[in-house]
Figure 1 (cartoon, rainbow, N blue to C red):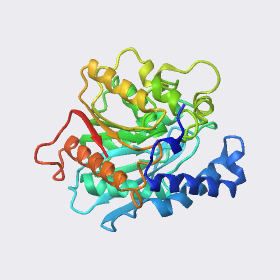
Figure 2 (cartoon, rainbow, N blue to C red):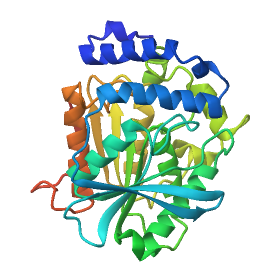
Figure 3 (cartoon, helix red, strand yellow):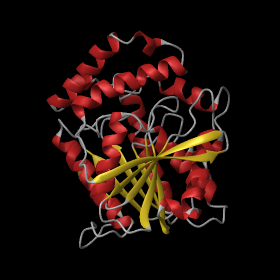
Figure 4 (cartoon, rainbow, N blue to C red):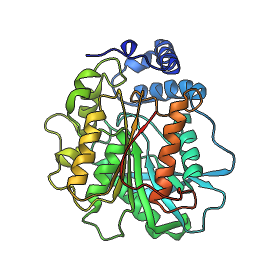
Length: 337
């Protein structure tokens, strides 16, 4: 088992970890049972760190909130619309991270990264405030995602090019996005154009050497507890864990981003290989020197800026926007340092 101090990490990552540790000591509710109090505490910690660590986005991205009817009540969609996108714009539905129990469209981290990604990729992005566990366990968040995708595709008020509508997410949100894409294969509301999975738990059980080597001290020490929060006690439902699904064919072109020192790294790479074996086009970005939570440190860590730029260009290529490189790369593996 490794320690972050053994890896020669960028000083900004060590500063980030130190700030988290110091801030967490001042927020006792982070030790509460999973639920509303701990969720609020997690949001407070996230915002305290992101104010320092994540670069602000340009004011040229218009941000607005929209409410729609969902299966469990009102769903909030936050729209990020850059200047110059067409009336019917290529659009990604984005699902935030937060361990299945926390996170929201209101967090500074998500707000800044979504706005920057929309601008740099030349896409419209909607961030979904999906229902959270343990009050709403699997498949509630997946059902919310499918509902939002259908509304975006069908309602012209949202300005979506339904032929260029995709879904993506970070961490827990990436797992939910993958589950939604798998469920959508049997629906007839129009195909999902692209699937974007950032530091994804390809399986909800530990996979590979990375899960053992980085199990403690790398930001996901409570991974097993979070799985039970999400799906409840007992066996993990197959649809909640993409690598447990026998047939992965029929999924859209997929972008997978992994972090070098992430316990989830090997599950993400295994998912990429399974998708390729099933005939799916896959692009993999490997963030060298990163921990699970450092891909958003765009104000303090130049490798995070480069990884986010590579991510945005890959989305531009996938959605065929004017921001795409002259020779867009839709498949293959790239190390980003």
